[in-house]
Amino acid sequence: MVGDSYYLGLTLVIIGLALIVFGFLTLRSGGGRTNTDYGGVIIVGPIPIVFAKNKNTALVLLVLALVIILVLYLVPLLMSR
Image (cartoon, rainbow, N blue to C red):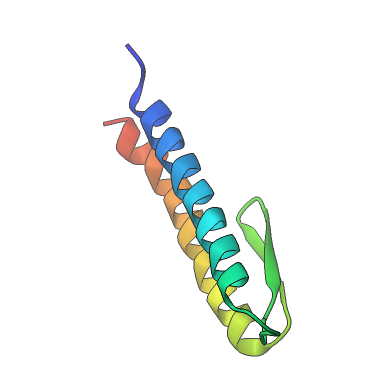
């Protein structure tokens, strides 16, 4: 009765929570000061807005944003079959 999109959403939420827990545990086990990079992505329609501390982080986030945009466009096409 429940659609495939329900399971896809539930899976993505579980993966997201697991990544948050993994990141928290990694920071806690680091001990002293660590050198961290930071950045973020804001997706407005099909346009990603990327901000980051350095170029490498920005490049990784841009690739991640493009993958997310592709997935968001391909999932409805695959679900309609």
